[in-house]
Image (cartoon, rainbow, N blue to C red):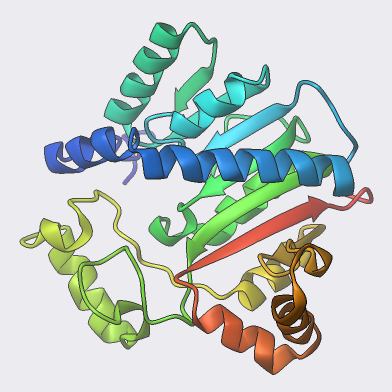
Amino acid sequence: MNDKNGQQQWDSSSDPGFFEYYEKQSQSKATYDRFVVVRDKVIKLYAELGSGDKSSLDVADIGCGAGTQSLLWAQLGHRVSGIDINQPLIDLARKRAAEAGFTIRFEVGTATELPLDDQSMDVCLLPELLEHVVDWQSCLKEACRVLRSGGILYLSTTNVLCPKQEEFNLPFYSWYPGFLKRRYEHLAVTSRPELANSARYPAVNWFSYYQLAAILEKYGVKAYDRFDMIDANTLGGAKSLALKLLKSVPPVRMLGHMFISDTVIIGLKNSRY
């Protein structure tokens, strides 16, 4: 919606059920372990693919929620900017950061208009965000804009190829036709909030790696999928052969994506941009 001056305004409030869900979920061991894996993988790939090994990186945690991922990066001495549209979650993130003794820039804002300068970040994190933003292409464009040449983009989102998903409490939802998805999206923000864990902005977009990789290329970012990130030489016998087959035969790779519930991309910003 717009204010009286015609400026875009966003609903930064939160349903109590949604806040309570993410307040607890953000501190679960599963969430913590997942973000540690992401952090360590991105740091490793930044050294291997990006601008090299830096002891302190500028990191944008876009859609940071309660700040769990931001805190994990700050613990290693990195400079973190956390941005989320949800005011109560940002307040919680600030409180947790202060209690832990870390200085992290947490701001209420939208991923479609990031409050960050051009080429100011070494790492951009977009965890489980694109599916919730109608103007998702602006999210990608903004993340690529603020990323420095040689920087790393980490992106995770829905996978339209896989029938399993965690966004709606409905079986095979990612395969529903568009008109039926729109129906359940409406119910989720009106009379049936439990369908999407009371999210103010439930998932409205469903992606494949191939779709996102083609768009990122336009913004000067080379995309790698989760299979590209696995070194076949670290696997034994049959697994190594299976991975090499998956990487070299496009239909087999696509089949592999159909068995994974989310889309994960690591992107490298080209030095020409």
